[in-house]
Image (cartoon, rainbow, N blue to C red; front, side, top):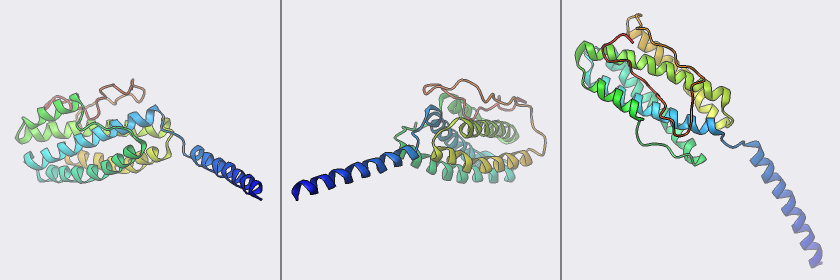
Length: 203
């Protein structure tokens, strides 16, 4: 009798173990692209939040300060989801934008008036165009359904921001080269995230 119970328990453990293995297999692990994307999009969100606050504080144009508030609200919400997924996946996230992004924000913070407005719009348009490239990279190269969903959910928000920024620009965009979707990305790479053209310049 005891022997029969032991046999039944052994069979049950094998069945449960197989089910658990199947569940794990159904949720593919994050690949390198997924991990890089989480860091990149987090830094982009941090940059856009800080930039949005700058627009609220410094812009002389109500439409631009309103767009700034939208950036703060939307990127804060997007980043909450990013942080939840990263924590679950045990992917450490940085506390600040990268060096280039911090430099761009510092440059903008030194400007005032119309010069600030023009430079801010140039920087945000370029930054959101790059964000769309990052989202497309994740959609094409990521392996985690959960991380890919972050990109899918963020895409319409970023597109809407870009439309608002272009409208605030008055339909006149300064030329800005599109970043290459195939540019080198490594875990330690200081990705440009949300690059700003030279404040007050045309590109």
